[in-house]
Length: 174
Figure 1 (tube, rainbow, N blue to C red):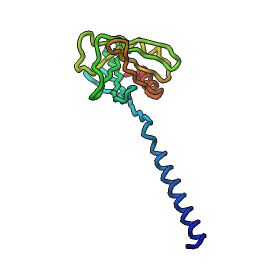
Figure 2 (cartoon, helix red, strand yellow):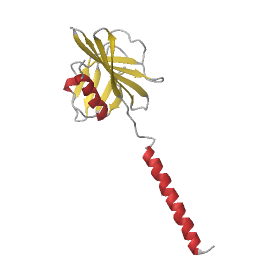
Figure 3 (cartoon, one colour):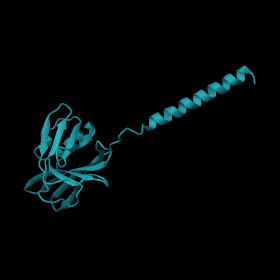
């Protein structure tokens, strides 16, 4: 084989390798977390409006949790705002009633009261009153700490984009 032909093959293989690597990088690394959430609203009963933001988030052990923030607006009665966390299979069983610990990126700590005073619909479900907490939260990444027996917590990271969406849901008007 001529040296010129070898150089052409080398450059062609180099180009194909660069393109292949670029495509894999564009698709994202396997450790990156893609968060997709959307605010939806519907009329649950005449005059009762339900706004909802739903997304999936990972805890520190890699278990997936569904996070649903929902606001119910009742005619003439005001509104409720709750965050429901639903653990997928193999998630830890939660104890009730225990407050949710919310830590901002700047280190400020808030708590949200457990709505399930005795028993949840399933052992991996927690629901927390966010009505007074969300207006105080800055639009920055958060860490949710679900208490377990002893001093242990399940820690769930919430990206800034989801926190922004939660604030959008809070300001939604019927």
